[in-house]
Image 1 (cartoon, helix red, strand yellow):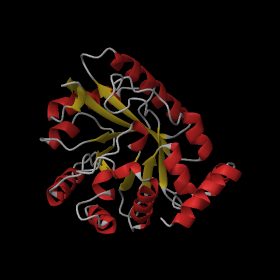
Image 2 (cartoon, rainbow, N blue to C red):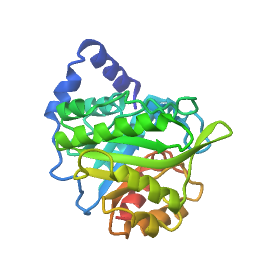
Image 3 (cartoon, one colour):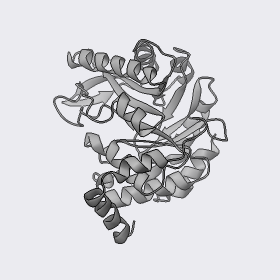
Image 4 (cartoon, rainbow, N blue to C red):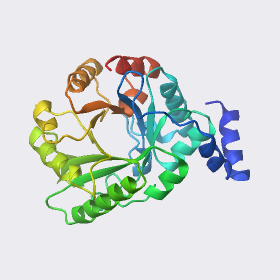
Amino acid sequence: MRAERLQELVEVRVRRPEAVAEAARRRRRPGSVLGEHGKLMMIAADHPARGALRAGERPLAMADRGDLLDRLCVALSRPGVNGVLGTPDVLEDLLLLGALEGKVVVGSMNRGGLAGTAFEIDDRFTAYDAPSIAAAGYEGGKMLVRIDPEDPATAATLESCGRAVSALADHRLMAMVEPFISHRVDGRVRNELTAEAMVRASTVAAGLGTTSARTWLKVPIVDEMERAMAATTLPALILGGEVAQDQDAAFASWSKALALPTVQGLVIGRSLLYPPGDDVAAAVDAAVGLL
């Protein structure tokens, strides 16, 4: 991202903030949530708003917004990539850069459970809500649901997510729900990545809201993926998680999951934006090839 282009973004935000809404109104919307390959291939970029800036061995990889936007624009320009997930600040930068034309855009909603905090499980809705997603002309909203059996704040998060699922459905928008069973280990929230935990988390997430007609799940790779995905008929998308040192093994696990009947695509963030070797285009093309 050249300094001049970044300066243009700042100038627009200072002098013409209404340009964001104008760009959203002009945006060419996709005809379907599925790409030409018949799947949904999304790039995730909602980590910074939760204070999660690490990618692999780089603790502040996502702290340079110009660099992040560069990587996002490269990823979104690759054939077969038909969607992006982000918070308002990131999506609006991409709107102003013209990078969202024809893309499936999903707004991230609850980012208040900041990484590493005592209140992490109490995941407040601090970003998009259903009316703002509808007003922007986006295709859906995403929420994180971490279920900690020992943290009472889980109840408030579940209730808030249930309301969000219902509100999105009222606007005929996709609700993308990312569920985990989580525990505090040495003071930090850790997700339990087992088939049993994913079955339990997925069945709870599938029952949120007044209808499941527009609910999709966003799930990690676990052992016995077939058993985990048999827990519900809701469409599912595979998330990338942390940057893998063995990228070939990660790709192989995604490919195997994509063969399951409920799995309808990929939502990958840091694994493709900050891959080993830093070749974003090659990493994205390899992921698209799995579809």
